[in-house]
Length: 351
Image 1 (cartoon, helix red, strand yellow):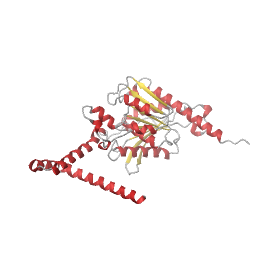
Image 2 (cartoon, helix red, strand yellow; image 1 turned 120 degrees about the vertical axis):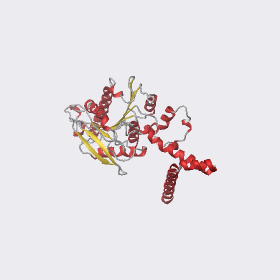
Image 3 (cartoon, rainbow, N blue to C red; image 1 turned 135 degrees about the vertical axis):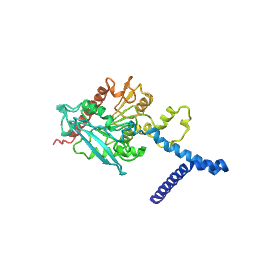
Image 4 (cartoon, rainbow, N blue to C red; image 1 turned 120 degrees about the horizontal axis):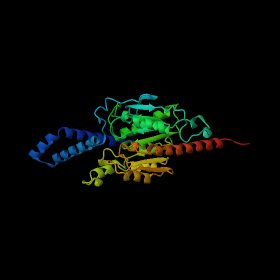
């Protein structure tokens, strides 16, 4: 059974390599193909031209989704926080790409929200949670520092910001599978830190980062305590059908999409406490998609926080935004404390 599987995998890799090489050759010689077809015609030349155009359009999808160079200095300068304990860290993904992270440390004297003096039964009870922050499709982590600092202060949590491959000071080129590997490497890094509570890791994702967070949570249900997503989408095919409504985009099969980010499928695997934050004035992603993700979530503890004035990138500036996040974190940590107390009592044997 293992040999046929290996043989099939090798054939699949060879086919993909041949298709990639063929598309590359066609793109380089597209003008020559068009001139030759104009002079001599022929179905074979027409097929090569169509394959070349398809290859160009397939690759061009990355240009429409990822904007690591906006604003223009984003790949050269990453603003760092000042006056706050932080670490500028570099890590490696499983495929060898070096990523840049910023770890903002919460060092306040107050305990985390939801944890009182009476329920600090163990050292981890009073340890702050750690939020993994996955940003949108433009800029770098330095542009999110003001937002992250407010999270640190209001939620009394550590915040880890990561630049995807091809963003900021991270190496590589962005892709869907690459971003998934970046998120996995970030979670792995947090799990190796002895000074961070591994039982209170919360994922936060805005826009494209929401899709990254949902995917990471779906494959790590036992390592993620909760998830917060804001102004994100159902999938890239859904967004394509919305943005290009004048074209029959809904008829295209999934394999036509280089990037898919199928959050509407992956959220069905996220049973941890979930908060869905929606700005109803979002002009880029239809707010109805956030409501649909909320409805698709199977989590027993889930909330939908709606902000009528919230735009795509600035919902976090709306009144009541951090109050909603703080209440969610309080409930999460209270539940966490109850679970710890229950486990402690269950381990006591009375003779």
